[in-house]
Image (cartoon, rainbow, N blue to C red; front, top):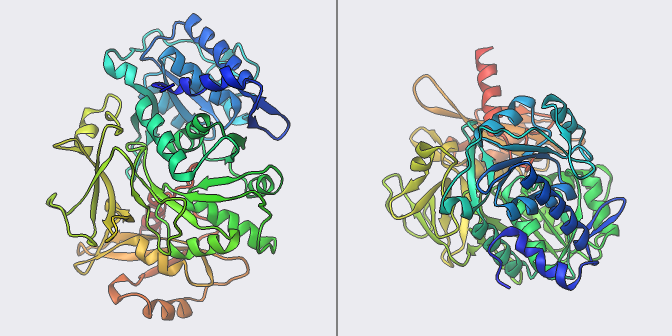
Length: 503
């Protein structure tokens, strides 16, 4: 069978092994047949409520079985699932529902108190399934028509560095191909068990974890949200063999182990660990590899480009490369004039291929700004290609700091800071000065029991970085602001710097 829509990934298992465990929850297991029955009930309900192909169905949720069933039901109906984290503020949830012109909103109230609060605001009604509620259908919502309506599987919210939300249209073909190449690069099979804590409202959880597990027959050890203690328990007691998450969540795992005096966690079945969605610095990579005794694999993708690059499972790299271009995609590294740079030089990453987003939902201007002639998607990420063709992520173009006419890449400074024994995590931003120059500001999260010794840190940095890369100011924070996917919210840090400067 060659699936063309997300829900078709489930069908072979319903036919061959309906009673096999698909999802492991803290209090029970869920079989393929049970998930299939839930999806069928929701498909019937959506059709009865008048949901049409091309309609958007918003899912206000945290990770749960009901969310998976809703994703499959939307695929069967032809509706576009539009997930939003229930822990977002009321204004954010409502703005997203308005952005996607939602016809129907579901709330996973059985697992999320936050979803219950949102359901109350919307005067939601009980669904066919226990633990779900839905809002009344918006009759004025306009369904998408034509080939695009059939191609798109989901809308994923992204705000990049601007803070202005956009709806990325993700196709069935992109999710399915991302699942295929993910299975191949990781050697994923039916005997594997994956810890799912990254939210399925984002492409990482949807494609690299959920869809790849459905394709391969792997079991999901599902967690509502990330908890270091719960992940370590799953590794020790629930036969987890593969672990995936952004760098920040690995940092939180290490912090938990450090706090509890644990050098090496119990993970008897773990054979593969992977990180993506953010640049990886060498200090974190080395600490994770020492802790787990496994190579930390790395990859590059985004909501706009679910298929990008990845390292191969049988190769241990000593650097932080995000790996090699995956099947079906093309890449360019270009300068400010859109000319290709030489191998080893830094520029903006451009990608092309059939698995890119068709664009931002009903936002032709944002789509125009992101795409270049020839179908190239300008990612806004900075990178370089190594001599062997591997991609290295340098940072975000909009985060580039210009100091005294020199380019300062925050990730480069962060990598050096993170190797200092007192620093758990750092974030570097630029602040505009009256003369148009920018000064480098470093935010630090210190390791347990460590104090901030600015003189010692500056002495260390003088040995590691050129003068123009040196931070002009340090700020120590108890923890870094993060999104629900584990990405650093640098715009929040910039706002903090601006407030201090004005205060």
